[in-house]
Amino acid sequence: MADNEINYSEITPEIRTLAEEAARSTVIDSELYLKYDVKRGLRDLNGKGVLAGLTHISDIQAKKVVDGKEIPIEGHLYYRGYEIEDLVKGFTAEKRFGFEEITYLLLFGRLPDRSELESFSNLLGSYRSLPTSFVRDIIMKAPSRDMMNSLARSVLTLYTYDDAADDISIPNVLRQCLQLIALFPMLSVYGFHAYTHYHDGASLIIHQPDKGLSTAENLLRILRPDSEYTELEARILDVALVLHMDHGGGNNSTFTTHVVSSTGTDTYSVIAASLGSLKGPRHGGANIKVIQMMEDLKENVSDVTDEDAVRDYLWKLLNKEAFDRKGLIYGMGHAVYSISDPREKIFRSYVELLADEKGYSQEFNLYAMIERLGPEIIAKERQMYKGVCCNVDFYSGFVYKMLGLPEELFTPIFACARIAGWGAHRIEELSNNGKIIRPAYKPVSPISSYIPLGDR
Image (cartoon, rainbow, N blue to C red; front, side, top):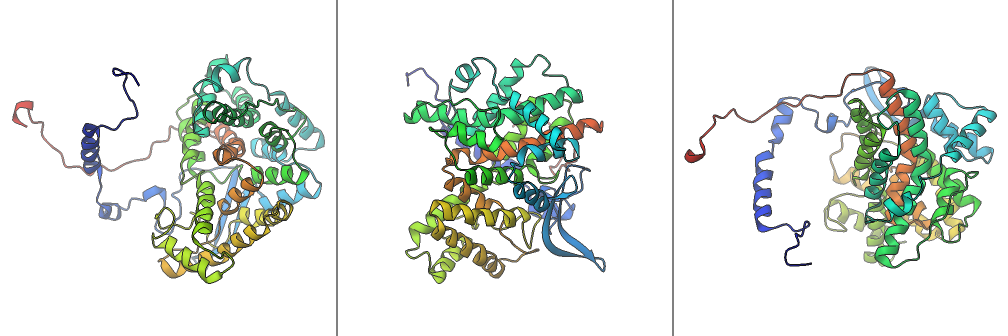
């Protein structure tokens, strides 16, 4: 770095001192949240979300009311009124890929017939083509080490290639959403290849998608150097995409879609904001933490088949004595589900099949052991307002690892699924002519009088 060049990443002593002052000035007494009955995180003490809107798109059920009391039940997830388990059973029983079919359902509120599905799949296939020189001029220039940032930048740049970028009529927004659904796999994978080429010296591979293949097949085709994959690999990735497509209107990134859409801004800005939300480790990045936690466990437990040794490690996790010392067993617990996460239940059977094919049966047994022990240990160590169950993130990272997907693409693949849900929710927000979303915040600072500069 030249002597006169600014290091934009440097935290100077002055910045550090100012940061400490900024932090002190914004700390709020936790008792005030109770005093004013503020639902922190828009959730009550039992984890129930504040009702902020209505949606047709999807529904989560984890409780039922019996004699006026809410009782936890096995979790259920519905897309447009259809139970997710029934949908997955439906297309897998016929050995079909489901992502395109369920995208149609989320967007249009009904299941397509055979002709409609074929036409819709062809439409998505026709959109799997980036603007001329986009890969060279955008993706390959200043590639980001974070694929979610790379994906968001690509989405925002697509605005400049769209002659009707600011048109928020429903036909135009649908067109934009379909194009983004089709392009997300390419934007994600190409961004990864560009970064590993320029920063790690890897071979630069840019495979063109096959417009006749499913989204899951194309993801594996353009990622792998030889474009080869097994049918089981593609079908399990397809199921993973379907399970991650939507999860009620209140998850953070989908709520972001509603919030930013309510301002009347363009589709690209909305989706970039949703990507920023999903990037957060408390939302879309949890499966990476599961993988890292499991690697730490294997390094620190000499015999991973010893249930007592694994139990002791999990106890250390909860007591901030192991891994990242955050006091969390990653992949355990969910904001809504308490007895079971329906996505995890569906996924688990496919995980075991893939583990057998890939030679990961012993590691699968370790995951299964932790799935059984984790909730038991958490219940003993923590005061819980509701039960704890294994969530979908617990196994999804393991699946991606067995598929040979790099960790850098775990969250972008989540986005490749969730973009379908975001598109449906954006159209829903715009179709209902809602007001701009603007929740209230209560000020708790005392009123002060201005002090002239010389008197301070």
